[in-house]
Amino acid sequence: MSKLPSILLTGFTPFGNESINPSWEAVRELDGQTVGGHRVMSRLLPTAFADSQRELALAIDEVRPALLLGVGQAGGRSRLSIERVAINVQDARIADNAGAQPIDEVIAADGPSAYFSTLPIKAMLKALLAEGLPAEISNTAGTFVCNHVAYLMLHLAAKQHGVRAGFIHIPYLPLQAAHFPNTPSMSKEDVVRGLSIALRVAATRHTDERLGAGALD
Ligand code: PCA
Image (cartoon, rainbow, N blue to C red; front, side):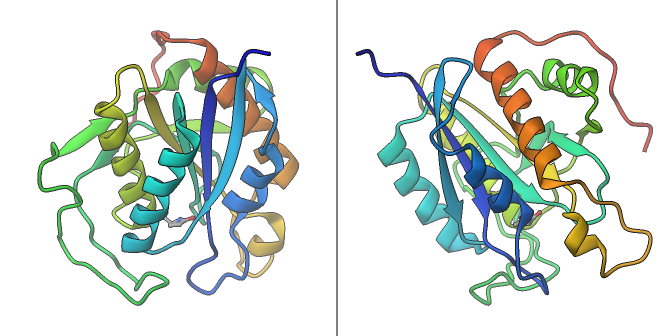
């Protein structure tokens, strides 16, 4: 029996005032599934700068992924938000789950200012929209732990030939948004379906599409 290449799919622990994180709720559902000829291995990362870095390195050592996709909660966003870029900075508006609150610190002293996603983000967007799921290209993953993990995934992948990486932010679940007026949400079923579609495209396409999805602001 031939061994399938692996996808490392990560979600985060709850942070801030939340008691769940939709990223882990969705990501865990895909653990062990075969998508685009790859075996999905889902792992939980702590929402803490230092701990997430350590756990990510351990997960990469264990899984030896051909492709990495980080997933995180972005409360207030209304769409599956495919990140274009991760930047080499930590600037935390709130303390992480370990109490750390770095301000304007670099993530990797030996790394570039930014990495672009190496996944076919426009093709992923097109497939999500075609399947009736709200999705968008985002030009910022923030400066908190998600950007940190997105940057580290790309930094580590850059050292391994052929390994690709990217990040998707997701909205609140309805049960979270219920606490805030005028706040968008997406069902777990839709998020899981969307991640599966995004992974299928990422795993099977090595070139992107030419499709305008930029932002004016
Ligand atoms: N979202 C946070 C960190 C963990 C998560 O799910 C972020 O956007 O940085």
